[in-house]
Length: 364
Length: 163
Ligand SMILES: Cc1cc2nc3c(=O)[nH]c(=O)nc-3n(C[C@H](O)[C@H](O)[C@H](O)COP(=O)(O)OP(=O)(O)OC[C@H]3O[C@@H](n4cnc5c(N)ncnc54)[C@H](O)[C@@H]3O)c2cc1C
Ligand code: SF4
Ligand code: SF4
Image 1 (cartoon, chains in turn green, blue):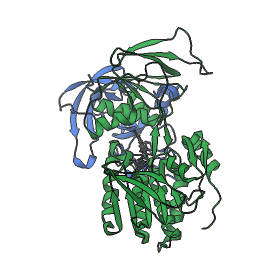
Image 2 (cartoon, chains in turn cyan, purple):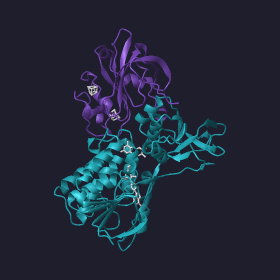
Image 3 (cartoon, protein in one colour):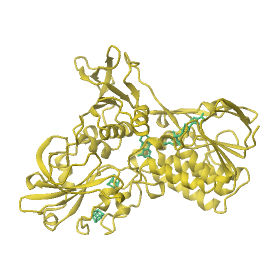
């Protein structure tokens, strides 16, 4: 059994920031990720980010990873990084099991931060298993990590930020986006993103869904149909479009399995993407010394995930006896940053969701 | 409408544009950011104090056209690509538009390219007069384009070569 003070599961923006914050408080950290590259979702984001300077706004996601990794490098003697390592289970007696390059490892950390992120939701329609139908994440990985064009003509399903951004990136890769559709009557993503795609001639059809996919060995056509205010299909409004790729981007759901196995209290909060752990303002779950940060605690943005990571790292380190010299000041700053990121009208839902899962703080 | 199309209406555009008098005085930014989002790089980039400092990160940018000198700093920092700079009287007939552009290959100086409106429709042909793409712009190039004055309120970008 390896001894570990603080185990962080997941090295996306949340996990990386948690690690930086915890080691700079004096704790020793083990950071594990099942991928062979660190950075989580960020390594696919070639676009400039929103947020403010503190969260690296106007910097591309790929470059934010570099900034965070350079910061981690400064503390390398106190951070043990395990790539290609999947956390398999979290048990009652405090043991966590990991699979690393076919090796099975057990650790018993004093505290754990779960920063596993979220997975993509799927959509049900006839023939949704035809080759050529991908999740948006897979398309992004193909293009931006491996440099592979997923196809030539794309239908994007979902006009949230991810659908809009991936459409733009597809166009940058030289792929034609035939249309973007969304079942909702309004575009869900930021309108600046929608406008920048619309002005390049890509139609956005709101109140439209996929009726079915057509193709023999791979996707050849998509049939769209309009829906009314009650989400009922409007007969006779079908349109067929020739596409060889359908990219599904209808939202993410938190990866909470490890937390549930451990017995952390979770609630179903649709505003945050599905089942999410309840937590206090320190991002500690219903179980002592188990913390969360990032999309696993409610699907938001990398900007919020990073600040949550800093906050959870700071508080988890404190909980096991490593209080940062500027603990109070930093904690206040992180809480204020989160508050201001979530203050706008676009965050109404997020705020409502968080109100359902935040338990009152036990200690400050 | 805008919420379901992403295409700003003529009314919204006219409200955002600098006044006729200001347009006569040379380069100025046009910021088409119509909905509050947690984002502020335009305001932090501006060195002329032309964009009001945000109280809340979700504020909409408010641009004081009188202070703006059209330097394009906000434009290259805007993740929404929501800003262009116009110089209405660049020549007798043409306005000069500076637009952010993130598609490769970049056109060449001297090329005649297809000009599009906010709905992506081809409305005019425009000439590329200058391309700026230094490293500091971080892959968002600035294209300077000659656009006939009659398209001042309609032109927004150029067609990209997607097959
Ligand atoms: C197309 C797209 C565009 C986006 N644009 C923006 C934007 O402009 N601005 C913005 O702020 N945000 C943006 N986001 C959102 C942002 O990427 C996410 O909110 C952010 O990455 C969440 O961070 P995270 O650390 O919680 O999770 P992730 O980045 O998902 O990282 C989780 C990590 O955990 C690892 N992991 C999961 N389970 C295990 C396990 N059992 N064992 C070991 N490791 C595990 C995964 O491999 C992954 O590396 C965008 C997202 C997408 C998809
Ligand atoms: S163009 Fe320059 S002066 Fe004008 S608002 Fe933008 S940054 Fe400020
Ligand atoms: S930087 Fe661009 S998208 Fe962000 S607030 Fe300013 S104008 Fe809007």
